Image 1 (spheres, rainbow, N blue to C red):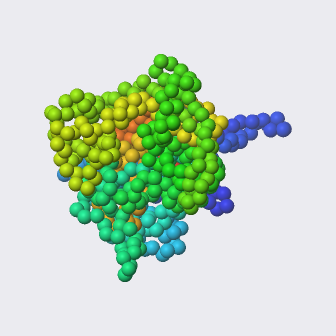
Image 2 (image 1 turned 180 degrees about the vertical axis):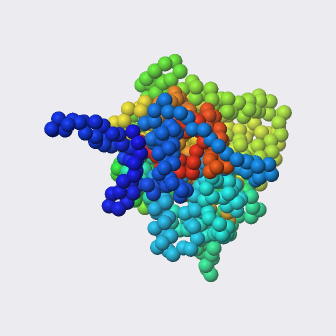
Image 3 (image 1 turned 135 degrees about the horizontal axis):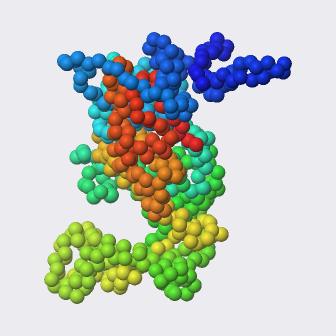
Length: 610
């Protein structure tokens, strides 16, 4: 076998051929060529160095071809290549400068999501003079690999094997890029979804939604913009609210949609003082309602369980599975839950039951509507133990308070925690004054405390899916823990917060950058899980194989170092975590030195979706 160059319509191509001796119709033996592999156009591989075809042929004969796709056709008996390089003491070549190579995998994923063509077309349409896609890539790679401020991320440009931005760029254009991202956020989300539908077969039957918030290290919240009559024209975004990390700083609310493969769909920001249930309808209308999805079931937690929201979901032809607070349910609903009648026991540690009921509720226009929904309740010993453990200190405090109230002084802060147990006629909501310890027992309704203890271990779920098996309802709802994992990754590994951007447009752009980085992480995780190289833990799906932190560390180890003689050496590709990623994507890195054209072909030959 040998490599040859040929022309097709005047364009040089490469192919691997073999000479065979055959007998023609006249019985005469003759030589013929058999094409073994069509390699592709020469321009795809040519590294610009002299005599590329000659060097390619010699490397194939030596058993270490410049094009990795030829490696399986090399004879094992062929001699290994011997490398010759020259370095002189005092030469700069004596110092190594390993640079990141993993961004080529990330870049290939972005291309498969259609973002390269999106940015190039819009750059031409808007006549932007700076490299908007280069800045976008740098922001994505930096957020995933080495999270930092926007300016510091731009300074990472030289950390990559091939700098993302070419010499002479203006670093301030990173902020212009944020404006561009914010202005085209909906289009970017739609482009990503279109390609995931086409290439990754995204067709979510389940969409998860949850809300979290991120804080800003600033002293004062944003003011609302008012007209001359004092009416709000535009709400400030960074507002004081209930921070999930218990920081007394301005926050912004973020709603995140995720598909049933654990890959984010869309992200939306809201002022920090927006209640969770008020985020869903605007987020659906802006991000989901117009996407080309078939019917789906929305799954969300109890903070979203508002029937104006759920009716909007139903009116769009979709369904829902949401949890509902048992303590805020009616007495009849609680009695039915606690009654042993109709429970189905799967073990001594788990029981469940369900029923179909009719409700009269108001839609977003104030009109009464009657709906049917299935109510599923279950009790789990494991869930009860977790509730008791999480609330142990508080439960012990209540017990001691009931037995010896004279031993306690209750501050305004403590009274806030106890407020849900106060008798209504004893609450002073204006002063928040310190309560007299000798009188505290009269303020606490210990019947409510007993109800609180009794509810531990029970969970209530409501759904529009009347025919869906109860255990399947419970199982689908528990998938919501995946979106909670998304938030942990964003706040931890991706360092989404604290926010250091200021304007609403830059906040939106920052959130979208974090979401795209998270999509890349999830695609890598999903490829590892589907590779068959690891054992999947059903209870810890996303941490199976490699969690986000390990992927981040492994990708930072994938570097390449330049050596004299136009040779390159890979670093740490034998690291177990990095090797798992490479094997999952079928990226072969044989133990050899590489030439520039070979590095280029690694990205070209990588397949993201299979």
